[in-house]
Length: 161
Image (cartoon, rainbow, N blue to C red):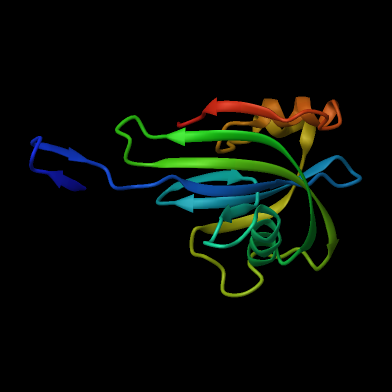
C-alpha cells in the first residue's frame, strides 16, 4: 500500500498478474487438468501459469506445461480472456486461455521439483468437465467452445470466486 498523505488515502500499488491457461483435448475427448491443493481444499485448473517479464504467451504456455505436466506442447490460439478481481481490489489476474497440442513427453506431475500446491495431473472426459471443481469456473464455456471448434475468441468477464 502507498500512503497518499496529501489526500489521507491509502491506494494499492499492485498491478495485474497475467496467467496463461492451456486447453488441451486428446483424441479420446479428454481434457488435461492439474489438481491444486490449498490447505484442505482440492480443485482442478487448466495447466499454465504466470507470465514472466519479457515472456510471450506461447513461451509461457510451453514452459508452464513442461514444469507442471512434463509434456512438450505446441501453443495453439487464444480462445478466451477473463479477469479475476478481488472485491477488495487486492488481487487482479488477467487470464489468457489458449488451445494447445501435445508433441511429446510422458505425463507426470511436475517435470522438475514440483510446486507444493500441485496435487495431481490427469485427463478428464471433457463432457464431464462441469462435474469437476474447476477454477476459474469456465467448464461450460470450454465445453461449448470445444463443440464449436474453438471458432471465436470470447471475453468472459470477471470470474472472481
